[in-house]
Length: 397
Image (cartoon, rainbow, N blue to C red; front, side, top):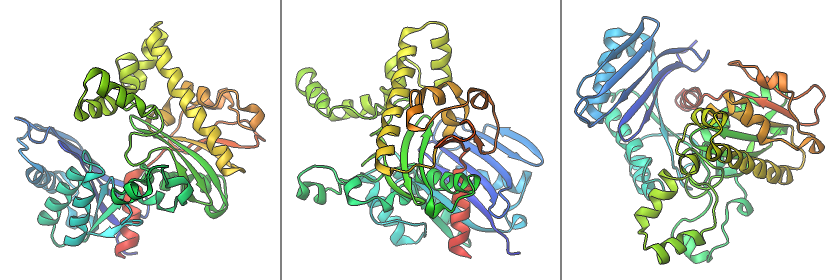
């Protein structure tokens, strides 16, 4: 059998996450993190079958970080040549309307990703920086870009169109794009397999709950609606992002408090969500404070779950027949309280949780609804890196 090993890279502004994955059997041969890029001292953590290596070298830029990663693989294994790497898969957040599937990276693709940075100024530039450097240091391997927005390119016009002046919207590429698509694509296939259903005949509501959070209505294995919009700001309450709000709030703060566009951007993206409501953005800390009696933390988690219930109800109406509600992401996979309160009161709609099953933990897909429930409730751990690896292999082989 031909090798299916892929080096998956996720490049942020000051970090690079990597995994060496066999896309055929889902084995992780190595994983690591290069962080504090550009600071006085960086940090490297590398895990493989040989153990864990940590060090604190200087990582002045992405090029030095990637070269350090390659040196670490060479020294501590596995070597890329020994692993039979067939491609380098890159996570890219925003593909706009241009990319509805993974693509081999060439100079034209790089230019397009750069042009799309206006739609994702926090994400696409570091994604692109990683791609450019990786193509320089690994010139003999094909490089594949996998876009978070691609899965949502099946949205119908009624779902992706905002009720704005149509010429303004067209000139500025304003529409719903959706995000977390790589995760949702993986979970859609895994949930359908677990339910023993053909994805093309399966309707799901997928709740990806982490520091970023989104809801997606999947009809026949394809995205039919999703909560994130032009940017990852719209929709559910998140760790530091507000999610849905009245846009008039921005005009009010601009006129009455004199806030600048940059200050409003910072407020909604970095100082809102759970952090804005109770002072912490990690749901584990929110839960700890709530159990200690903190009223703000209790309200924060209630608002968080209430917004999820709103979207589940809306997507039940969008889909009609719904085969499962699926929880995934760090919060969705691990927080039983959030799961139970996110669909509380839906028994008459055929959705309920078995509390014993809900309290259980596991790394595999599992039912948390009672036997015979009209709509299954599942927990399906996501694996974006494996999905990137699989899509990369499918494109290059």
